Length: 360
Image 1 (cartoon, rainbow, N blue to C red):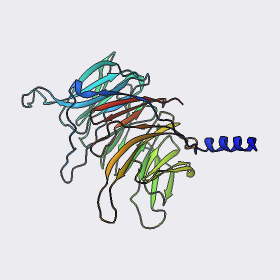
Image 2 (image 1 turned 90 degrees about the horizontal axis):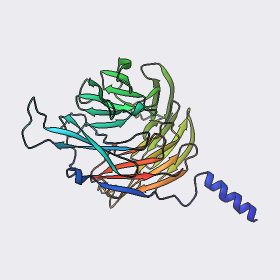
Image 3 (image 1 turned 90 degrees about the vertical axis):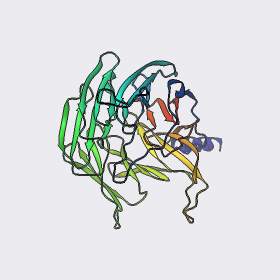
Image 4 (image 1 turned 30 degrees about the horizontal axis):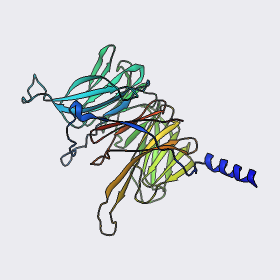
């Protein structure tokens, strides 16, 4: 009988149903001592594409880079002096400050920093992308087709994707920004990318399946398609064949068109954003919990807690959870990052940087 109980406990643990989920300890850095301004609500006008910022990233060696936009001095902007500066701060994995860098920008939104391969940092401002390294300084700069251009990097961090809706798709090398692929882009719903593919979502439809995605090679032919009805949500590529379907209160992993596992969240919880390591073996999901809302009365709830849940992709086991100590005041995007090996998690929220280590 004892042997049977031990076997059952082992089986449940390997299926990801272990009752105890490790809570990840973390270090918190107050960025106000470097001049981080009070958080402001993003604004945009009707007809404008909202420009997301991506201001936290992790190098392969565990160093964390974060950033924010400040006003450079008290003078007005001119053609020879830009008013705004993107300040980047680099910390080691223990939270010790290393150095800062400044990059000119023209907007508070639409800026980004990405730790890419070869030890380089990609800095995205509304008008350009700049490749920089601590050893070489500015390596290369390329103008983007417009401030609405969407920027992403492949899981191995070696390819940079620039997508300008309705115009063009460019794949650049993270070594020097040389063009690897360049093609016209007619699809408006290009989502995430893997090392070689991109996912393109079709509009929701009334007939089943309600949702459908097409996975294409970058500037190449279709590799496969997948359709589903539940959970409705956003498809995110982990690698060239595996998808995470981010379906609000449910997430599931699909491998070559077959659902491998599914996980659901508690009352008031939902999946918001997904980040993965370079191999797609570990990924993290932002899970806010709202309270006080009412669907019947059309009343929005308010955020009670924000946590980051870290998963093992092979079986859906929850490897750990991190409670965000300073939950974002406004609806966040791109506010956390995983290290390439999945061992480190960095969160930028409400002017605080939170760094956690994951013991796998």
